[in-house]
Picture 1 (cartoon, rainbow, N blue to C red):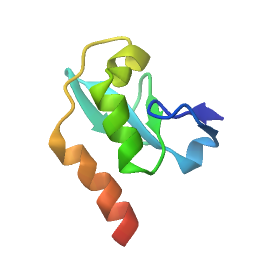
Picture 2 (cartoon, one colour):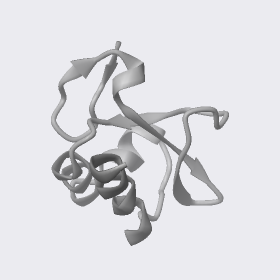
Picture 3 (spheres, rainbow, N blue to C red):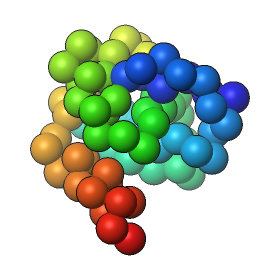
Length: 79
């Protein structure tokens, strides 16, 4: 079980999207090594976590959140 960084809901790990920090940037990747932060499959949770600084808090380091990560959510809805 993991907790969404946006809404705080607990869910099985496979139902959430995992993010890690790579060279100060936020990267999505289920198999990437290191500390992970998770969000639900809802873009609102991602945006909430990004605007409130929750990724930096969970990952325990500064990270920049690129706009390209939001595409993960629209691809999941249509793919």
